[in-house]
Image (tube, rainbow, N blue to C red; front, side):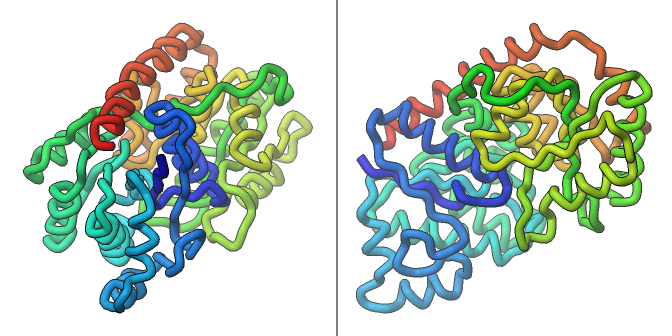
Length: 360
């Protein structure tokens, strides 16, 4: 059995994208023990043709024979992840066109394509809605990772086959003692620290510093956590956490830069609390048994967490006082709720495993 994951990169500097790749592979392994999983994302990777631009995919498609289509035909199943939240037009039409074209080419190669658990929408442009309907109707199965996405798909005329949750919950638990114990980890997003299309970056900076200073004033030790590693990518977290550390200038502050996905899961799993601006910093924490307080910046956070029964979400776009809301929660005993969240995630992933088995 050979399974291809689309748009999930297990070597990405973004550890959330790595979690998506590894989680999708873990889901496939649950469905098909001993399966071979290959990841294909923006670079050429294992494919004979680079898939980062829809024009290159079209050029190969009209050639005879199509090297890419022939290669795609060597798989038994494809799990189209759309990078978790890219099945939308919020990142531009080029991305949506490219990802939709590759999914269709895979289907034409005779390989069933499953839209794995992910956020669906929003689609503002008419072309985007047309592509979304086409992709969902062509898919062998469609899975949403939250109920709002499921309702959105229903509104587009293609109800989802499975309401599941994020595949990070399919990952194994880190080994005990794999990382030192820490008090509070505060994940600072390089995406939000700089000017961006999601929130006012100056306000975000103020909220982060207010939370950190409030924690320090309360006698807590703070680890500033990068969840996107240092690279040429503009939104990496490493410069941001170093800048925050310099502004705080406190011996009670530590900069924490994990080396890979296993490391970050061990790190958050050994913390008492994670406060995260990256959704997967929070999901990695919850899936390893650590309470997480999200500083959310998009629609993808709250519905997913609410479906899991986790209601401690602070939305940077709507909360009157995001920093104050977080600081009021940091001393709460949330251990029982974390365990209930993990159990609920396992329940939601089971139908996704069964759907993969049915399709194959």
